Amino acid sequence: MTRIGRYDNPYSVAEWHRELPVGTQCEPLNLMTPDRAIAHGWLYSRGGEDTAVCVMHPRANFSHHYTVPGLVEAGFAVLCVNSRWLNNDATLIHEQVLLDVASGVALLRERYDRVVLCGNSGGGSLFTFYLHQALAPSGERLNDTAAGDPFDLNNFELPSADAMVYLAAHPGEGHYLLHAIDPSVTDERDPVSCDPALDLYAPDNGFAPPPEPSAYSGDFLERYRRAQRERIARIDAEARRRVIRRREARERWRETGDTADRRLATATDFLFVYRTDADPRYVCPHLDPSARSYGSLWGVRPDWINYGAVGFGRMVSPEAWLSTWSGTSSRAEIAATGSRMTLPCLHISYTGDHCIFPSDHDHVVSSLVSEDITRVEIEGDHYGFPADKGRDAAVRLIADWMAR
Image 1: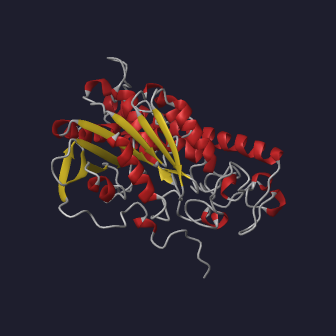
Image 2: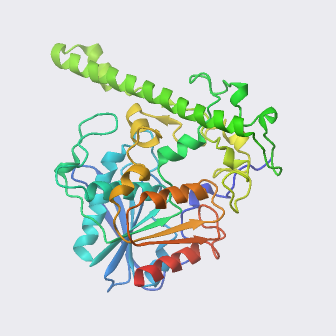
Image 3: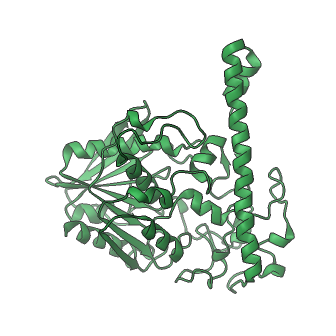
């Protein structure tokens, strides 16, 4: 059978691939959040450090993140945090996960002189969103979620950090999906419904299977990008309709106590979002050119993967869609949150990244208001492979930057 996956074990791509330094201690931590959830942390150190790095992702397992061995060896403590929504984006609310970040930062503030946030991949937009709220003027933090549910961040302590590292960080998960969603879907209930005029993977529109590059006309790409935004808008509208339906049922139930209304108010009507691996840049290297090879983050045949179970945002609650995956409704977008990112920062991009492209990195950097930005490009794919050239060089660079 033809292999289409990019990695031998996709579950280990963020794990370290070298031994921890001799003398490293790991302290497992239950990070109790002020809204009564629990995030989990692993604090790696050898003792005597005055600076700690926090590494976190909204839902990925970063407990053994590949930056840990090198940073500990260089004299820094590292706290790896897994959020309350580990491996689960079906109900992930970004506004709430900010309190998971706060719990980790608060612990480091108690123990170390300096705290650096390292935002890898989705961690970049998460930490920038956190800083946007932590550094907001008194009383000006968000008081609800993207779906409009009450959640007042002004009621919580959100300690700030001293510096920020962007490591292969994208502008936002919604931004990512806005460019990767397949706009040719004509029926959200049918995973194979397709408008041929918008089919990215049709030879008639310019598609070529690997190793040949695809070639699309400017007219097709313009219609395609516009249709992607239109599909996001349709899903947004459906998500808000379902949110309102639950909210109205909840209000009726409070008045009548009716069992049917209670059930409707409680039930989560999940959205099924088919086909989210369809960015033209995956198969056309001439768009947003870089050193990447053919294919998407998931593998070398996005035209097949697009129809499978693997992918981002495939099954989500309406609230999670609006908070995390909507490119027009999510607040965790660096284009909006970078306006308060005033900390010194290091921005590292990998030359062969399959899901974050040169224009995305430009978008991130141009959105930040920091007066101290160091920007570096390093050989490697999204996960820093080959490790001896990509991730090892990136970790050395982070350590040197923090030391300076």
